[in-house]
Length: 218
Length: 313
Image 1 (cartoon, rainbow over the protein chains, first blue to last red):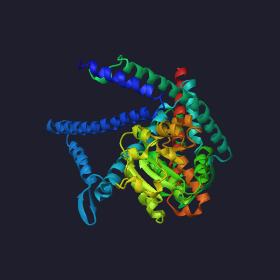
Image 2 (image 1 turned 45 degrees about the vertical axis):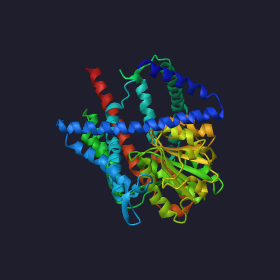
Image 3 (image 1 turned 90 degrees about the vertical axis):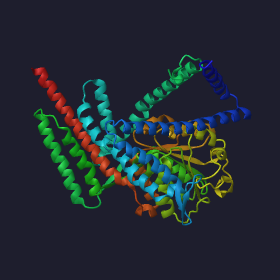
């Protein structure tokens, strides 16, 4: 029964969600929204599980002195300090905890941690891509065969359209780049979207019918 | 679609940087013709110069607005003053340099036209970035606009597309209060807005999941609400299948942000003095692209040369 009950629930709710979509009745809408609330609630529980998992893994890393264990202190400090700062604020001259409103977002430490630590860290990681892309472009973007040549030409045209030094040929690159985006790229994207959609339907059916049981764990 | 080159600031710095890059590329080309590969640190050095030179010696270009961006601009222009528009901040700090200029430009445009704006986020990191826009754009440039009369901040709500699925038909069910716990029923500008399908336009700024695509699937199509997207350059091509029917327009990457900022200055000269990060960032991006193109060409010269040498052996 421990294994059958989840299958029955998945089958029943899966079928309900399929048929509900085609029933434009108020009660059907209400039931659908009720189930969506569950999604949010489950998401919040998943967040709690995620935090617990992060804390336990990090503490274990410190205990066992695994490689780079010192950095784990920063992980824990970041996690708990941001939670603490996010819930505390100075309102009417008094510091206090604010669990239901957004005053914590104005906490100077919360803002500083976000603006001067998280934002530069993420922006730095993302901006380093420019260096790796340049290196990869030099080593990998080579006209080895017809398809690679097409990709190379398309990439050059797309980059050329941003170039202000091209003078009278600039608009030509702009038009060609727009054509690439609006015709071949669009067609490929649509095909991918349709393919993904069909794949999702097939996977959903497999889950509902109990063929795909990966969500059960082992 | 760059109309003309307008070099501002210290021209000498830009000229020196361009000369340095051009000279270096010629040197690399000569080395490549001799069959020598370019080291990775040399490539990194060139990118560093290409990106940092236009930051140290600013170079800006006047951008001509492209049709896909103009569609968004024209839509905001065509709405009658007092229309309610939503701007969703669905991004994180990594994406922010590219998409926050769009969000700021949308905010400026909506307020300049006299629209009422609903700010929200379905990304946890979006709320702080939204607060930044409120501080740097709304409160600084539009001090006369009053919170809950002209704009409202709904804040972040967990639940991804589940949130969108509900707010399209019932806003108060998911957001009973604004971010400061003020009940939505007591907010005058939302008196007529019972759901997001009552809005005149939704500007979904993001690029990941959930993002503009989810806004189309769960709000735009079921609620018949016009949606425009502001997305990172890498994700913009994935949104093109939805343009122009399901997305009225798309701003893809910093180039589109620069075009929008240019259009804003053309239409509203009072914004000429405000910070325009999109236009500022076009200089480094243009030079970096040129360097990358040079390396692609040099790489191919090395490749064909070595191929010919192998075939001769």
